[in-house]
Image (cartoon, rainbow, N blue to C red; front, top):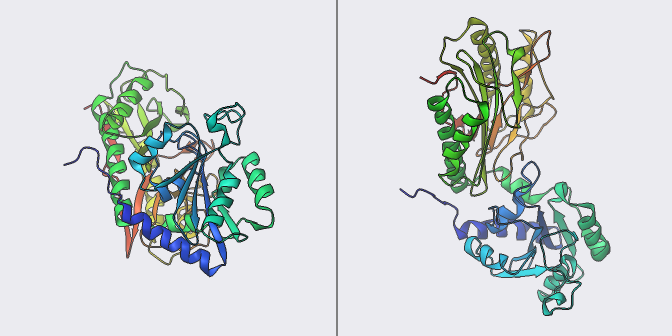
Length: 412
């Protein structure tokens, strides 16, 4: 078995390009210009370039566009340094790679103001217009997608140069395509989830009294990273077995010294070859599970299960949150924020978003995490003990994580 599997094949990209080119021709658009920030900007939209090129790893440290013309070959425009070309060729089948001027003056990129041979490189907009001219589709509209995380300077650069042909489409065709995963993508996400499970198993085996929480988190992250994770991070919340209100969640280093009997809540953020896994689990360290903690966990789990039970293709995404809220309200609990999770794939958060206001319909092979963030009665303290990543199937869901959905005994 390959220790570092990659199930994404070149022919998958050709299928994606075909869908996009059909969309462009149907709408009389000359080209699609898909933008992404570097993958390290992980809380925003970074996955469009990954989806269209295969360059999803952390070697991508500059602004990148993929140009899909209605006619002609797909091209990648990258603002960076010459060495990046080899890195791209190692992971992407796109042959037409063009280095361009960075819009950001602080970017890791060629200094085009100095008098060197390389200073003649074009801007993003100039190179895009050249591609349209080469394919004899000049003066056509250019649909720009991936603008959620785009800097104002890049946006203005494109708008000023494309003039009346600059278009932000009502529907981001790349986001729509990305929301329904191929079988190969599901394998990638399952592998990322497997790495997340390994981290949770490390939590179970390595948790012990007397160490700082960050020491345990470091062991968990190491276990995923050494198996090829691009990114592995876990937050931790811990506290004595009294009430949940005494526990504090730390995305920053968790410096509290763990004690026997502690209630420990942990969340995973795993990326493998660009694909995300994300989940929450909970346990008790070297002790019995207090009735109070068992009771509040069961309320949370039952509410979450009520939302998961209705999932199937054709159901409005927002009904997941509605069902969870209604179930939790029976115990005088409420939800924080109006949403109970997010789609998860080449971005941490992508379509579909299970917020109660969302009337989009679920589709088979959507991949979603539901992690209901509850507000406890009286105190208002946030409680998010369970995060479930799953695939929407023809008649329900398939959980992608294998670690138990229960309060786990830790350190035994």
